[in-house]
Image (cartoon, rainbow, N blue to C red; front, side, top):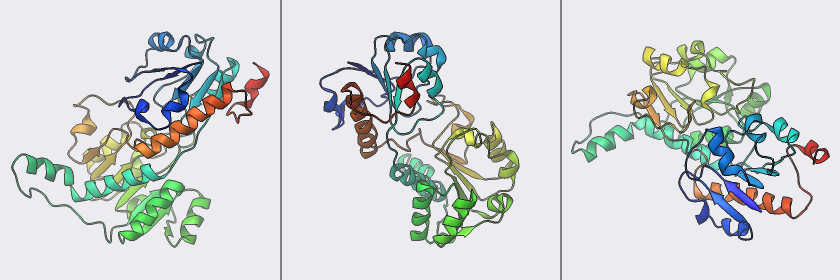
Length: 323
């Protein structure tokens, strides 16, 4: 079988321990980011299977209509809005999902919080430029951490906060708030109180129709001038342009971001990259070796099982009636 793996940005997939499990197949890897449909058609034309790295490649009706040979899309992690599952079903393409892990995203979120609060990047840059102690950061102890979305990542983050002596304030569904209280945290009585009270707010919501642009300019305007907004989930959770406008108005005063509306973000003059109150990382939330072994190990196992004719769990089981 011919398996195509796009978007291997760092050229590391061949180095994974799980990669040799595809030794019996022809594998093509690409290391750039492409959204040109014609280029994707040329690369995927004779592929039997695609292994997708999270949401990096958009698979829609226009692309699928030009890939008659494609039989399987094996998704690392869970399917998101980048993949039109209904279109896959119409074109007879099976879709298989893998697992996710909260560990790496939670760790990166905490790294961003520490770095942003202690202002480590400008201090380090100054030191490498020959300067000594040019700024003043803040400790975390005593600051309130607000978590919107008390799932696996949010729960892990709350445990980190306890170790750093930070009170935790949770907003979200009634189920989330009840779970937070059961774990010994506070559940804010309102959305307005959540944004107004927290010193650090971290977003941990799935992107869906109900959550797209959920955080508004009015929400951000309630935040303290000293507050920090952290987003390692999805940029589209925040209304377009609202965060930059809010930062320019001084509420919140700071942001730490791992996700952006357009990725990869390669423009060094992008206003978020140039803003003195913003710390940015290039969508590293899930990008670490153990996570890759999990994601691609699952994806490769799904490919082998599918083409071996084994009983497989599909994200679109309806496709079986169309094949």
